[in-house]
Length: 296
Image 1: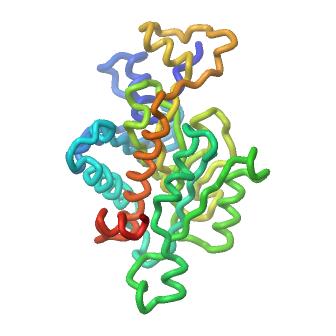
Image 2: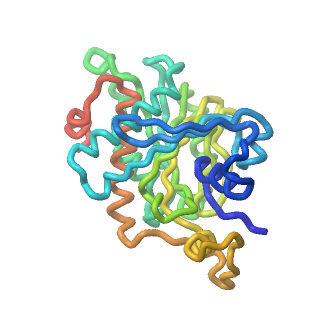
Image 3: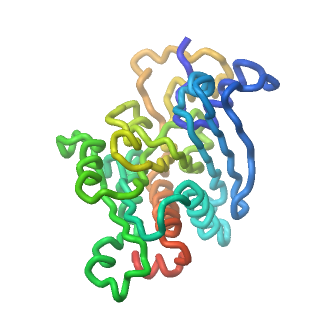
C-alpha cells in the first residue's frame, strides 16, 4: 500500500501513530511540544536506526514551528515569527564560533512559485562576508555570511547540490544553512509551518525530484535544513478529504501536486520570515528594524 507523502518529521510521526495506535510508543523517537515567542513548536528527535526505519528520516533533531497568525496579519506576529525562527536556528548552531563563516543556500526554481522559497530567502538574507573582509574597521563585529541561490538543473545545467558543494570547497564555511520547499500531507500546513533540522537536506524533495543531498558528508560542514511545505501530493490530499486509509488511484492525476491559490503572497511572506530569522540567528543582537533598513 502506498504511504501518504510528507517531508515533515512531525507528520511522519503522526502517520506512524495512526497506523500503530495512538497509545503505542514509537521506538527510537522522542517528541514533545512547546512554545517559542508564543509560537507552537513541535520537536521530533530520531535517536537510532529503529526511529530512522519508522519515520524514514535520518537521525537528528526536527523542529516544526506553526506560524498560524502570519496569513491573517495579526499585530506583531511578524516579529514573533522571525524571533522564533531565529532562536530555533541559534539552538542548532550554538557550537559554531560567532566569527566563523556561514553559507546560506537557497534551493529551488524562482520561476515556479511553490519551488521559489529558497531563492526568495536568498534575497531576504543579510550577506556580510565581503563587508567584513573589505572594511573590518566598520563591520568586523558582524559574522561573515555568504549566500547563494542554487537554481535547479533545468535552468543551470548544474545540480544545486553540486553548485553548493563547489562553493563550499572554495570558501570553506563552518556551517551551511540550506532552504528548500517541502511537501505536506495537509493543506492546513502549507506555508504555515517551518521545519528546521540538523540533518541536512535533499534538494527537490518537496516536488519529488531528489538530487544530491546536502549533508556534512557531502559538504564537509554541518548543515541546518530549513524547509517550508508549499505543496500537497494529490493522492494524499484526496485520502485525507475522503477519510480513507488507502490512497485513491487518481489515474493520470497520480503525480499531481496541489498548492494554495494565493501561493505568491504566502511564499513571499514565509521567505521574508525565514530570511530575517536566519539573519538574526547569525547576527545576534540585530533587530527586525535594523534588518528592514539594511535589506530594503
